[in-house]
Length: 276
Image (cartoon, rainbow, N blue to C red; front, side, top):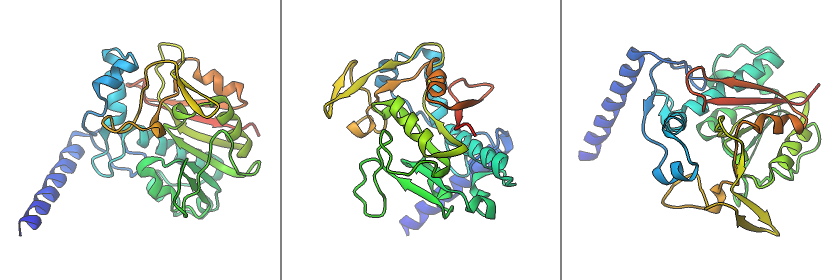
């Protein structure tokens, strides 16, 4: 009985949060379409803020990027922006009518797409998985149903995909330029890599670590994303990107567009298109 009581209390609390969020108003979630004020729970921790040398404003913006979430589906503001960019890109190139990722792959034109999701895009994965042409991979996967793909040496053929999606992945890749060239190679002409990566726009990029003969060499004290109490080399940060990062994308051969949030400079989604 106590278990049922706790479940009912959680359900009532969640319903109240959704009602309050809707009543306060806010942005439309690109993932599910819900309109409401995002819920917030702190996502950054003091050590990470110190490692990245974030000032008070950038710490607040980055924390909002990760910690503010849709009351309905739980998408972070970053994921919601990524979802909205995916929907907009598919609409522009293929004439779909969906306004949110949740319903995009109900449309026949969207279901015909070949999409590479390279490492899980968080809670967007369940919606991307509705596309029959999705190729989903996780670096280092040992699961028989989930192949491992190295962004620096993808196994896919040239011009294979209508869309490549990555979500805060490039900062964990030792050779970013090689990864960008590989993504460009597997895209069809005119197709796009839609992605997020954290960028601090008021300073240049810096490299925290590099890979030498299969061994990680730290140039700065190690910094990890994920659980701060269980750091893992799977989440080690090789690069902290700055204002020069867009030019790096263009140097790889992409035509680049940025979808920026008017209020939070940390909320940027990249649309990097292979020239037609």
